Length: 192
Image 1 (cartoon, rainbow, N blue to C red):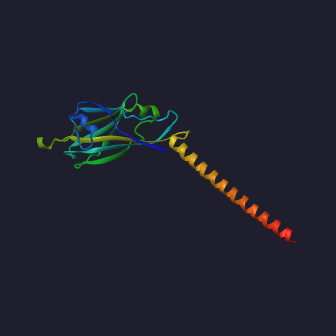
Image 2 (cartoon, one colour):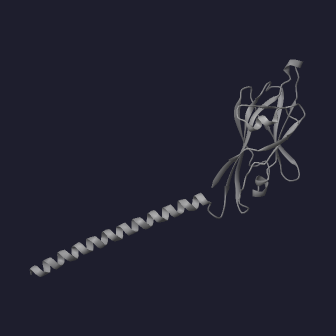
Image 3 (spheres, rainbow, N blue to C red):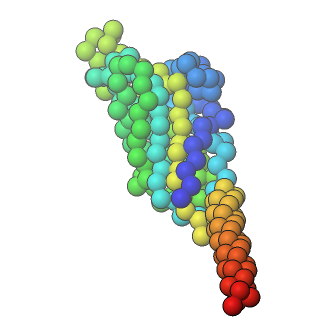
């Protein structure tokens, strides 16, 4: 199994300060009814891989978490599939398992297109309207491939070399003992 994490490198949409999504510690601010599309995650998953798990990690907070809904969506090639992100009133990273949100394929992850959107659903007073502030979005994908990765190949090669060296050491040790035993037997035979 291989696990990789990626963040988007491109965004467009109607939120304020979208460039802050690319700089830790700064926040992009949601605009009610608008969305922010995130792309160019930089995945390069082999086409023969099987995706086993996908996690969305979103760091941020809601200024009024009781009044706002923040959604995270994935474009599946024909429509947006979304999930509610339970942001709180303090800046923290939320992990959401999105494995079952869409039918994941290597191509979908390699060309991943996601979206943030939000809406205010209850306004108790004008001061109660808030917005989400998002620091970053990160996608973590776990996959298996019928062929080993370069790292797995290196590990297999090292293990094979260690086993070979162990066998060679044992063989040399046994040859040394046989040689010593042979010499001892010759000495005993000559003595008689």
